[in-house]
Image (cartoon, rainbow, N blue to C red; front, side):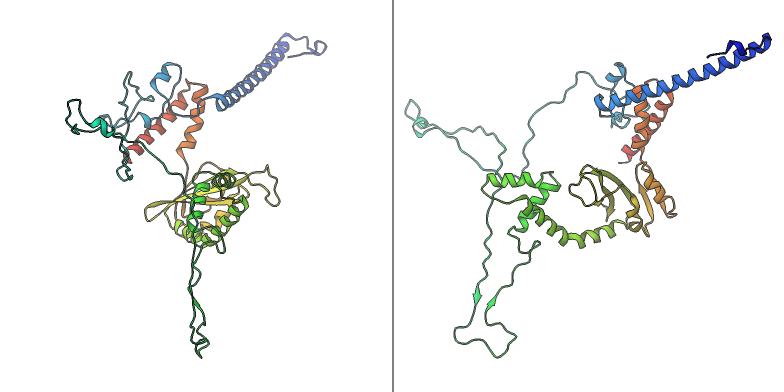
Amino acid sequence: MSLDLNSLPDDVEELKRIIILENNKYQEELRLQKQKESEHLDQIERLKIQLFGRKTEKWSQIEKDQGFLFNEIESSLQEDSPEPEEESLFSPVKSHTRKKTGRKPFPDYFPRIEILHDIPEIDKTCSCGHELTRIGEDKSEKLDIIPAKIQVEVHIRPKYACKHCEGTSDETLPVVRIAPVPHQIAEKSMLSSGFLAHTLTQKFADALPFYRQAGILQRSGVDISRSTLSNTAIQVFEKLSPMIEDVRRELFKSKYLQIDETILQVLNEEGKLNTSKSYMWVIRGFIREKPVVLYHYEPSRSAKFLEEWIQGFEGIIQTDGFESYDSLLKVKSKILHAGCWNHARRRFFEILKIDSKNVQAEWIVKKIGKLYTIESKAK
């Protein structure tokens, strides 16, 4: 607050009014500055939590005593609880109770190979001269695994011809007869269908890249390059594409869909830098009451491609708070756009991490937790 002394009036009342106005202006500036500092401190705390804090959103009574506030409501649901709803924010933790540990038996459907460890025949005679009698046995089971066995399929197609003539007058019949080449999902490939099923499962279900698979095969004496595996995978995709399209059409007949997207980095993509972001879209629905997940790649985060896919769809589509979904689905009168309680709850949960006494955030989190309790009982 600065005033020019030369410009001040001589009237006392006017001076008081000017001082009051300047003081109010100063107080407002100070309030805005403190508010901005508080927001910056909150941002710093959130960043510290993201970098160094716990990732889980489950809390226990022990953590409450240490200064934490909230616990996941559904984790506090006890099967033998007589109460219809869990009122507490915290899950009770029983002290000094441990489950009995021990080996779980191996499944009965695993084949058993018995290995006998017997004493020498000379030791089966007692010192008195009589033969020892077997009175029992000790038995223990150990889990064994046989590494992938590599073999070569040799496909033989015998040829047949008549030694007494050169065929009949019917030119439609071949002189030499041979069985047709068996159908393969990757034509002219040296890899069998079983091999392809194995390597694609390793890549897409077990997250084992082709270059690592090539190294594993090389240790077994098989030299197959990563490019061979990649090119064959492309052939398999081209063969399966019609089936994927059929699955997509069936999936969008469902009355309830969940849609989400995740960041994907693609190398050597035309028109894009290797550091730029691409996106894999995940669509989950039900076909004949069984869950089905469909993956779809897009070079951008725009949900515009869904416009064609949801033509004629009637039902519920659940997404997170990404604005592209809202702008796309709000014009569809026969689609109910459902949000996600987990995403909504997370923001209030972050507030509680910073300010454990925030009553409003605690109230909202508790209400969402009650919904989780109802959902757990419904399941």
